[in-house]
Image 1 (tube, rainbow, N blue to C red):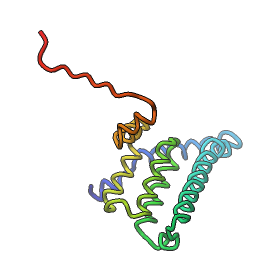
Image 2: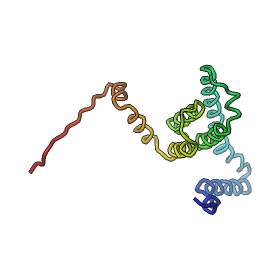
Image 3: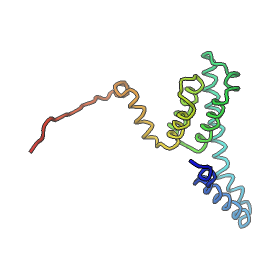
Image 4: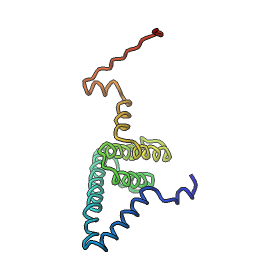
Length: 165
């Protein structure tokens, strides 16, 4: 990827510009238009952000109760970068599956069970790009026998050898 590609506006940038433009028009045409925008967009965004911070804080407190030193994490640049990156993804998504996957990724990064920073970022991007179904399928593939046992399902495989005419 080149610097030119990085400087090009993304779809998110364009959507934000359109929404900001609409808000400014609404405020000039409709008295209280910007308040309407704040009600419809700002409040839900702030609610998502606050909920994410609460979930993240609970996860970090849990890790701390199991011996992880929070003050060490505060000085870890890789961890701080991962928290900022996952936070931007979490705030943009309503999916509980994605939020849980992001919390799990942060946990693994905090515990140093993860791989190098490049692969971590790729994985975080996959969480962002995948639909909930993709994440569920990956979860099943992690341990298919256990997943089916957990749901009281049975795997029936049928295999027919040969060619039928």
